[in-house]
Length: 451
Image (tube, rainbow, N blue to C red; front, side):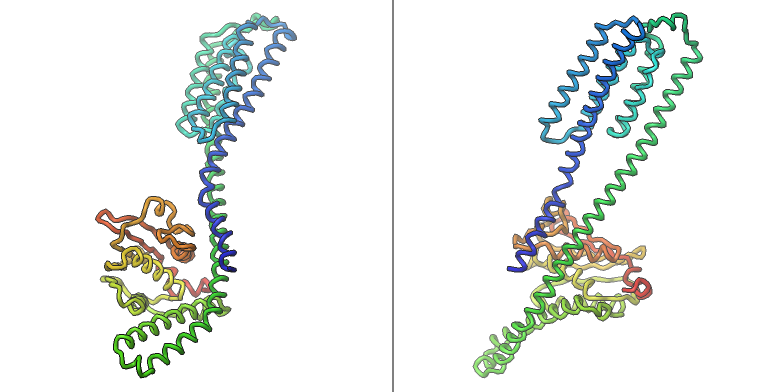
């Protein structure tokens, strides 16, 4: 009961972490559309106040009917965008944000056309559209926005209605001044895109790193809780295992049972499996103890691999493991129970996938990386399992708590600076590849790191 109560919140946390990425992205896109809508309402208010102020305070002669119609059209479009944001249940595409900015640029260009074109000081509001696009849009849309606003800027130098103000009747702009304005606008727009895009990219990378750190912290919390469960279970299992060992020893020396060769062989097999259980329990208790370094042993790469394979075969005499480490240079390494359990978990999963078929273990070394390839002849991984590989509680076994072995193995490999990858074989079956840096296994590296 205690284990069940502790594992339930772990599973809930894991599912929340695994399934929250898409929901967060959709929420961010909806928030971006909402920010654009709010900015557009500010633009509508500012445009209306500016038009009325210039007309009635400065005494300019503006085509009020046309300009107010444009402002009303922008308001209706923004209302439709707000309704879309409220009712949208799925992903809001980047192209939709780009379309909204295109409408903003078109209506701004129309207003500038009726109010002096390039002579209107509000011409540089195009840069606001570029800046907003640089934050919200993908690169191909951003540069399209730069080209579009630059084109509108140039066209307004050629076609526009003059802005009639009492003190600007005789003002004319030279061709050189207009050319300078165009170059200045294009340069400002390009610099805004480059630097805002770089800053946004840096922020996204930072957020991705923080999300990865949070994921690792959650996984480490899983490991700590499971370690507590394992050590508690190991203590509790000690007494029943000892009792079973005594009973099996009595059976083996019992005259009726000892005279039956079949029963005697089965009792010996039970004693072998019982001894394996004791070894596992002892390893858990040793790993959970204070003297963590006692679990580490100086050995060589060949000896470590050969002993690991021999122990695995002895514990599973009915299984076939094809083992190959040809052309693998021998070297001194440090081995501990965590590394053995990591490789053993992957081998066990391969046998579970195809119990009656041989399992292959190929060990190679290249570019200071040790690679262990485990292949089975099972049905392979489903797309869902591959997408959630080594995440807790994702498994094809269908048992409560299954999937933790690979989860722990991946974390052990990652702690050593390595990784575990899974794939399906075209000819049938699956392959799991363990890649470990040799530097993390050598005596010098492990000693300098205090491990």
